[in-house]
Length: 559
Image (tube, rainbow, N blue to C red):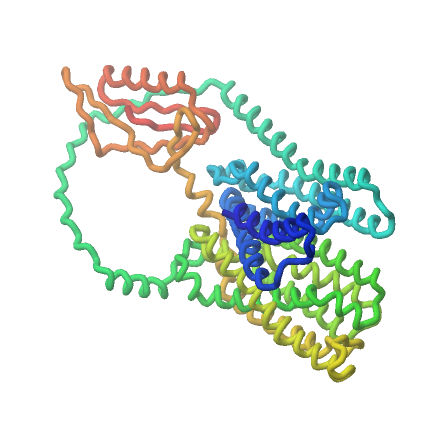
């Protein structure tokens, strides 16, 4: 659905333009009446891709979710620069072809790699603290960001040929596929370790059973059918449960999360923080013009914002996960510190400190990027992963709402008022510090308010983050059932128990044996050995218990 939405969005823009040019008529842009439709399809396509990738990766690596979110959101911040390099290499400087590239390339990549985006069985023993591959991904992404920054700066001062652009795009593509080599290397290591684990033969022993026979269980009375609740009782129950949320960290329902005080605080803080930084990014060109910066410096500001946006996302994800696991540093407190840092960047713009726009662009780009992985990680930790896809998109709504209020209603209005003071109604261009001073003082106050409100969330979650918030992922597979062919595990299994009594055999239901298997796989030959030993114990004098120990693990199936 995301591929189709993206394809439709850009086909609506490209096809009318291309057909009109083919027939020799006016080759202008499409009408403004069609723009809302284009935005609708384009925005929905991004939401599909973003949700599918983020939710799947967080569920696959729940104990490294901050690192995963920081890495994915950081690469998303670099995607615009990556597309620029590919566009220049494939089509050259042709704006119509740029729209065509955006129409087919993301859809093609999504279709090719769609089967790799799936939820995998989680193995806490191997995935919990194995962060080495993620740091390899980090180093690769840093190399990609540095290369893109260098190429962006060089291409502004040196005229590249088409072959030079092709070489640059080839290097970018090669770096993008380097993480695949890291994954293959890790899979080879896992395969070697698995093969070594089978080289040591298992130890099989027989435990004599008790001579006291177990009585047969009395038949339980058939349960009485419960009356089906009517629709009115369902609505009443839903409303009642909506205001009775589970413990923090458990799976909230959608309504329980939306009316939760924690979600309201988080939404308001994100609205203030993301809305303020996004307003500064959107107006960075006009801010540079009003303060008298040259055009090349303004382009440098935009490049700095893009790179530091990536740096903020990656740093917030990796650093917050490390300090959380080592020092129990709460992630909401990291969000509060980021919001306070953003206030510094807003104040530098408001008072127009000479040559401070360079530092302001770095701070604003960094803080804007850092808020996203923190927001998504906090939502997953506090409200659970069951409805994570819906809740992160609800949290993302704070961005357009904050941008509309602070950019359109505050900054745009105050800029127009100041421009009319300087030039009357003839020219809407404003120059000087006064153009954005009042608006960014307001944005600073709003961002500071969001930071203070987020401290309430820090206080409410202090006990939760002091505990082991990832313990439930390790406990869920503490007692497992091992499938002999696939190595898959389930919890609490009742083994079949056979008692030899003359000629006939009967099954007993009460005596259970917990099957705790830690080794990765049970071969077919070992399974046959279990059965042989079990039958031998049965004919020797009743039902025996076979205990197999393999390395540090053991299994207790009852025959």
